[in-house]
Length: 484
Image (cartoon, rainbow, N blue to C red; front, side, top):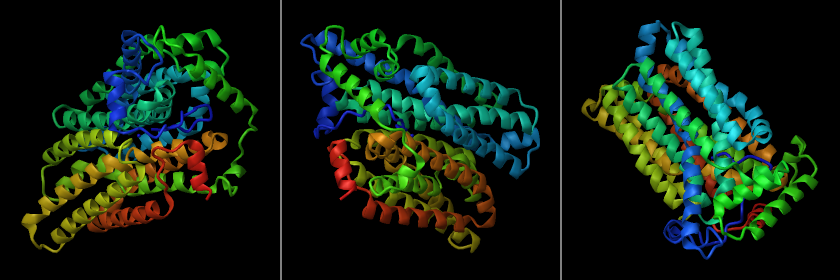
């Protein structure tokens, strides 16, 4: 997941050449990413950007670890602490409650103490949460720990993509920003795999590792130059930009553009909630909020949080299904990282929604056959195939693209307010789905997945009718399309 819902972020307009060639060229030649005749310096600057990105996405990895923690640990936690289904459902969903509350504060925190400061604070909250979970002897401390990790997730999923977008050269910004979603998948997958091998308490301790790496790494990467310019730290601003673009690079043009945008932002009147319903902005709001609603109510958090239970219900061992789930989502997400600047946003959304529909339909059919005692030998195959199709196609499109599009379709004036509302809707939906999933499965296993399939079908219609293609277009062109 990328959240660029922030007033201060100036996303450099796409120059229309963001194909695979553009993704490869900066790493091989570093010609367009920096303005320097010194190839050695340019190459070094690219590596500063890459290293800074890798440090920051440790927060995304932590996000994934939190999301993936509950699925492989449910039986162990419920048995050791004697929790009811309702108690564990509350525990599983509290990560989204913490993230929802963070959505109200993440913008102010990230503006006040900086992008690095926000990530540092989130890492501290997350580390504290994991320690509380590790030491828990009952439901209450377990819930407190889960809430703390959830609050850190809400900060991470806002601050990390914002930081990456603000430090990256324009021609590789899309690919680097989508590394956020890739690391979320890797963190989730690793938690799934380790959870089948070690105890739930030891799995909580592994959550400390990315926190420590991030806290240490933050000492060695520059702060966002755009944030430094915004708060008036001119000397630090130029030092940071030189580190990111190369010691001998000419940063005059980029620095002037950043300063001009900061000044323009200061002149804008403060956005109000009522602005979101004005004719000029309403379609942007509908697109951003709609994509978040469909992303969540398609069932992703229920399926990922309780994947092992789904496989057990279908007659498969929880570990084998969970391991397969964990392994498949990472390479598919990597494909999405490459394709997002090549094939475009809209095609990925359409393919993704189609795949999640078929995945849910197959899984629902498997449970329906099981309930009717028909073709029982096919039930595990259909259930696992359906879940894996769902995960693969969700990862390639619906997982990352809504965040990318949210950063592109809001005009600067309401980017912070509109983006924050979208984030809030996302986490409220995530909480509702993760909390009710077990109860829905108790009501009807096939019915649950057929409902999710219906949401995916509506997603297809929504994207086909309302969502424009934003690849290769400037922000002004996107606004013209939206308001046409």
